[in-house]
Image (tube, rainbow, N blue to C red; front, side):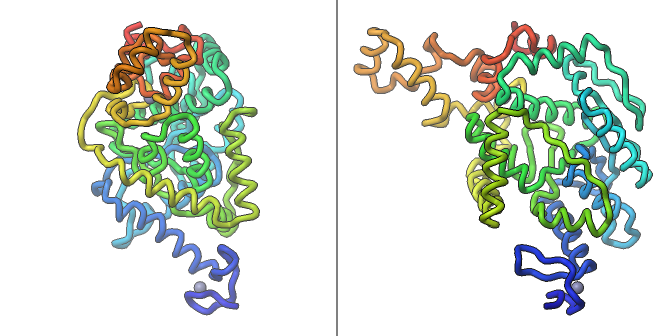
Length: 384
Ligand SMILES: [Zn+2]
Ligand SMILES: [Zn+2]
């Protein structure tokens, strides 16, 4: 069997049935990246774009694709001015160092930012290409905050922290767009995790091509249509060196979902693509991003989502309320069909600050953490 495009001997086999030679495979992968950006029309020419690098498989390929795109001299040149950033944690200094090396190979500068800067609202830009020193007080406060939460909540919260830092630094660098390198695998895991933690109404932003929650900065996932199988071939052909690393905390719900998705994918090749296609369909229905509503202080999600019926919040709140022996409440439930519509007013809400400042997911995280651990700038916004 030969390459299905040009008839040369095959070197790449995708989905056990599609044969390519290296050249045709690289052309088709580049095309997928460019088509994803092109058809979604969110970038204007010569736009500043901040690119978040984690050092993993997707990040390594994205870096190479961007370099290839901006180096072209013909009409196909990728017309963006890229800036690079890596958000790092103390435990992974080695990873940060290898990302600096990765970027230097392309002559790109990269800003390395410690996650603990989330604790202060002072997000000044560090010198590029070096690992900054952070005050020990800050790193301890950051670690204490995450350790005060159960692993599933901490894993979910960490994603929100990274998102908010990316948006913050994009603004500092005058970038109206951010590229992140979620692969289809990551998105399938995030999709199921989102549903499980009650972030179903946020799927379009979290899993779809563009996260448009921030008024000024759009977060784009330009390689979401490239499968892990393709990314692995890409890395082999270009002889790149990704550093595999996962943010998911052990014994969290997300780690169970991740193992479940990967195991299933091993036996059923269509698992991840089916999950992602379902996510796309669900996302499309929720299309009111142009209307400005109140936003969650932590994740910027639309707080208008409270109008949706049969949400995870209502189910949890109802079962919690019913399990209280409260005769007044029972009477209300029996006498008044509209009672549930006014559910927010009831004092036994287990979810602090919900609808006013926080979405359901963030309120739930907040209720599970040591509350004094939150950064002061967030506490201030929450009027604590
Ligand atoms: Zn070919
Ligand atoms: Zn939120």
